[in-house]
Length: 145
Image (cartoon, rainbow, N blue to C red; front, side, top):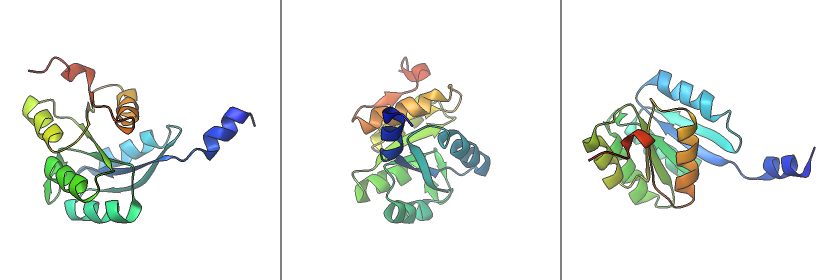
């Protein structure tokens, strides 16, 4: 094992929690994210209240939220997570490219909004950016009015 490989293995992984009403979306997101070195999906749920409990119990670094969450909305879930856990980063990963949805997510405190239609590497870029204190919008949203 090279020194670089050893450092990569010993580096703490970024802990991710997935919150999305669609099971197929959560499952495919987990499969994708688990293949990225340094990322670990520690939990997933489709429901607002359970998401709140999981953030407290699992202590993720990043919560990846969709616009639709059972028992609430994605922005309301994000807002409450950030009120209770201000060190957690929230990234929206969704199909909705409507400017109102983007504004709603960002005003809730999310620092990234990624479209599921974009290439898979966009979610990795977004997570890396928010962990560095930066914001991120999918490239196709940059010309949004």
